[in-house]
Image (cartoon, rainbow, N blue to C red; front, side, top):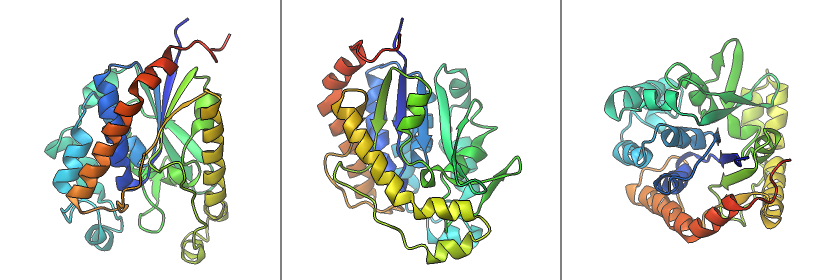
Amino acid sequence: MKLKTCLVLEGGALRGIYTAGVLDELQKEDIKIDTIIGVSMGSLIGMNYVSKQPGRAIRYNLKYCKDKRFIGLHSLLTTGNIANKEFGYYEIPNKLDKFDYDTYKKSNIKFYCTVTNLETGKAEYIEIKDAKKEIEYLRAGSSMPGVSKIVEINHNKYLDGGIADSIPVKKAQELGYDKIIVITTRPIEYRKRKSKLKTLSRIYQKYPNFVKTISKRNQNYNKTVEEIIQLEKEGKIFVIRPSKKIPIKRVEKNPTRIKEQYHLGIKDFQAKKEELKEYLQKKEGKKK
């Protein structure tokens, strides 16, 4: 029986360009992936893998990183969203740098976008079958608290999936995949500090479960990182992570920094390529 493989993609705003470098190289190797679970920017990057458009993510992020219509303070002040809804989620993929919705829809790769439900404070993993019709889930999953409007879909209120589950390795395990490849956007030594909650607690006071989840985010993130390190040591998952820290901002306007992050992803993939292929070929851990 053929082994089933799942890709887990961490978010991190423009740090996610690292993932674009890894995935573009992964696609060149024609390695079979059955499912992708993306978080925040990881979802937006991962879509291009399913639509078979290597180079697209780095291309439009470089082209529009300084455009006030894309991401930044101007968008926040004029639309209420730091990432401009109309420009980033509709004009770019539909007109300026077209996303191949047809190829995506015909793909055999299952794609899940992680969102955080404000009422429950828990993560939900939405399977995106039609990226054009379901783009609002992708926007919701990438909407950072405090600088984004709440996205309401089918009477449910959502924000950034990374709040409830930054690196959904457990979800990949629950789905029963034999091989799990995790791409993080932080070096191995990184641990998240406790966030200042005063402002966010006030903004989201109607959603106590969401506030509680935010308050524990650093603990949950750091616990997940430790679990990933252990699973990696045991050979149960394969991890590609930044080999060094690049001082890139979440909303980066410097094209040089963005390129550096992207090329680090390429470099790190190439350094682990043969090891990855060996991991994928091993039968250990296969379910009976």
